[in-house]
Length: 298
Image 1 (cartoon, one colour):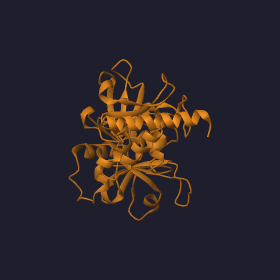
Image 2 (cartoon, rainbow, N blue to C red):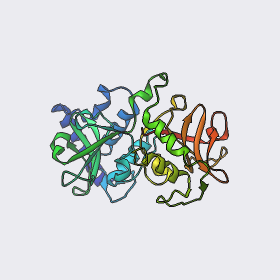
Image 3 (cartoon, helix red, strand yellow):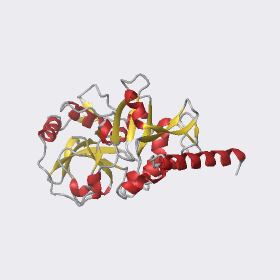
């Protein structure tokens, strides 16, 4: 262990001890929350206090602002975006006063507009973030940054840890999304099709278009789209959910290459190859076997 590492670890230990004496309880954020991946993320973030800041660094010794969150969630098996803008759209929105350990918190130096830095809330009115100004990962008082707060996102919904519930009535928005898609049935498929045209679509320009017409903005490509909304299981599929798939059933990589819209009754609405925009059977097919994740944005 180098002298610098020893000093860093000692500093973190003193910070944690001091926080406990003052009631901050930085080191035991998970003790007062359910045993969940979110609380694990909070503890991981806490363990990184004192690590160096480096623009776009992905860890484990140096971290950029967004990359700190990406790394922490990766340690619990969850893949999220790696930029502040993509993470600002991931998961579900929560209010400033409703954050729990593991939530992503976003701030703007001006106090409004798009976020310019972000961190992970760890409980007890504290959050951890990789600070460019202080050149390291630091812990700060959450309420002290209220004037710079612009949003918070919850990556893991607590409902994912509870037994499945009966499918809820489909919203009018979901019906509208499917209706929007049906009017393009038969439209030709074109890889890389422009988002400004409706004469051709690729899979993600199609989903982007029909959701936009229903008042919901999605990113342009399928991998970006997979970072927004709330994750749901196959057993909880509802009309309007986005289904993300890998290249083939036998592919060893979970890299997302296709997106489709669940249309209900075991079918998906999407576009590919020669049929263009079409309905396909989902249940029990290779489409289902290729599924990597499912997100609900409605």
